[in-house]
Length: 329
Image (cartoon, rainbow, N blue to C red):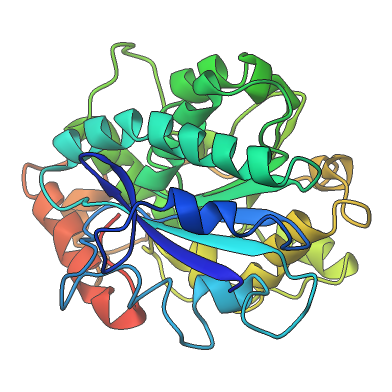
């Protein structure tokens, strides 16, 4: 059983579609060979829901699902253990951000169980959007070396959080890949407006995490894509001005994460840190000489001077993505 579907509950961690605690199943995985990869979704999901269950969407059985793209379910005896982690994330963004922060302790308990059963196998985390908040907050509850590598995709978390968590023992030992794009600028600004930081100058992690053990890749930058191509990762160029999901939907990008999480010997973090981007201003994918047909003129103004209508415009953009196997955050 290379993939275990787990949900967060009030009393702890449970197997998906059951009331059985996850601990017994995890303890039975002691002989699984290969890394454990914990997958975290973001906003607007509800495990067990007909329309919004992450286990039927990004963690599903489709060929383009996260588990398949990361190398699970392909009959490889060393594929390791996939943990698809679901949590109730439907509600206001501010309240779900608070919930995501608190879930860090549950992820830490999950990792403790994995390390207890498989002490010599690495544990990695990949997280999209609000899942990045959970992933980062798990580090404060863990010892050094508990998490080997972490991938954050269009993270809905603040730089102050990343800075604090990367200074913990587990944070100093993790190798972090932070994937960003100017396609996500509107969502970063929405996050700042709807989930205020206690620090007035704080920014979302999409602006780039600077730490000795972190690399930020802006995957809408042609220069970055060219350099990744030299490494053998052929990622398609962006096709939208605004998109919160391209960090895992863009053709070719999941192969980069698969290799990063599974082949640290052939893809060291320092090689990704050497990749340079062309500096472009924020909103550069939105600013045009005329009205933007996707979101209108009002959204072209920098934060905080956006019109009062722009949160609704962000929600409309999110809804339009549902046919692409995802939700808002």
